Image (cartoon, rainbow, N blue to C red; front, side):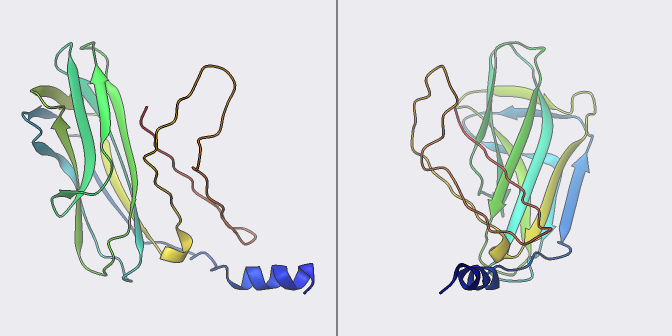
Length: 197
């Protein structure tokens, strides 16, 4: 088998990208004060979307952003995306020791629900085990939740919860955290990465 034959066989398995993707957007500039006690999740107003993937194995890319402003000098909170009232994304954390220091919270997540049905996604916030008070869109900044549906053959992701020590100095790879994508001419690749440190 020649190199050209092997390349043709490889390219025959690559699924061409769709020319368009279903997308939904929810946004709000309404001020909201978040007060959570004992780990209770509070939905963010205006950040709720209904999505219906056309195929059972489709993937839904969700990205949310908002500006969070602490109401005290000691504030810790968690943020996540929920499906049908249950957390599906990892939790994202904010920690503040200064009242005037706002945080931009960005939550990307790829969900593969496994069914072509009406799905409801919601962004929610929770306190870090104690009373938490903060404001979202305190000065009417726009917050958003967007969802785009992709065929499963065009999505790949890896998840790993292994710990790795990173010492000062040169750049170094994150162990076991890589993915190879085969593309056709003209294809574009979107890469998102989140880490807890």
